[in-house]
Image (cartoon, rainbow, N blue to C red; front, side, top):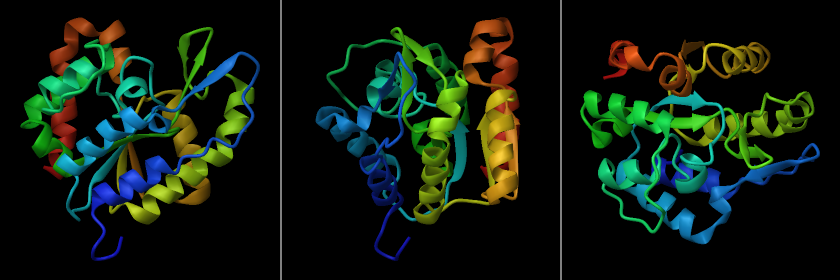
Length: 228
């Protein structure tokens, strides 16, 4: 990052340049919200609102965008409802909600709100583009052929972000299972970070531990407080 480049500039340059140059397995379709002009205008407003500075962020890596959150808005773990209600950004999207976004914004609001949270953290994904199979969400690691096909793209995407977005040598991984295992394997080979801290994935919490949601919110806050 040069002296005149803001975090917003770096992030938007990365997102606008995403080129999925890999072959998809049969039946798999790609979600690239950044290729849509209207969506990217919302993405532009979001990052220029919360990242128009040069302060480093701690990176948080999800899996890949889902249909009802980042796949619509272009903002990780931010569904249309949260985008307007908690980020103050009007839009023309259908006002849908998404479970993972419900949890993430419970954390964001407890942390002190979107402005304070996003000044400390940058949420991204191991694979910045999403996938569907027969109209349903699909993770990059759900199919061996997809894992192999996306590998070079994922590595390049992580490298590009680290080369342009000011960040720390410690990051968080959402998902303590396959996502963390895959990310850790890449990190052992390419040394992206000194340390990756895994956290239970918001979707898993909301689907299987919803009654203990507040306990997990407090777990996130306790760990995130290191960067507060």
